[in-house]
Image (cartoon, rainbow, N blue to C red; front, side, top):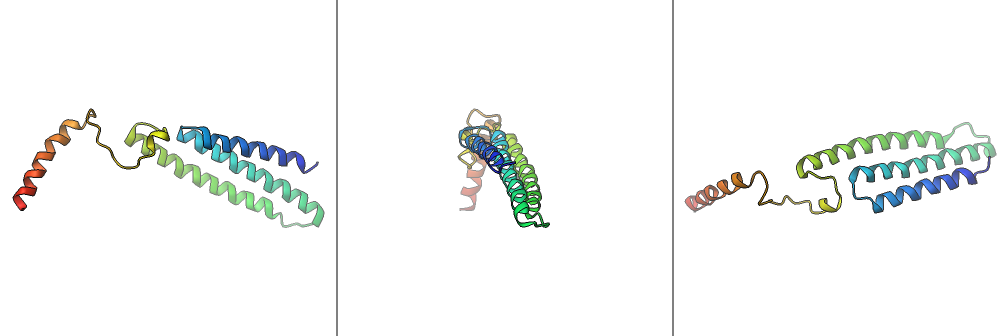
Length: 132
């Protein structure tokens, strides 16, 4: 088998993942695109390991070992990334990346806590005046 076939497939996978990272707005789809890019790297590692082991008669298979490490890192990345996306979705109500660019908490005047927050603010102002 020629080395060009897995290299071309890997390049197509990587470009598809790169397009998904740059064009998608949903955070879960961005994580899936990052996984596509990591799988393209894994395919390259294994293909070049097989190609180099034929040429050098090497028994170490370092490309396959690196692929196992990459799979472990990808599993940890998707676990932590999904946990962050779920936490952000619970707090903000959306997983749209364009709406999540501002990381500060904004007060929504029409939100469900608007009455409770306005009721607390005058009390806090009176406490500040009493201590001054």
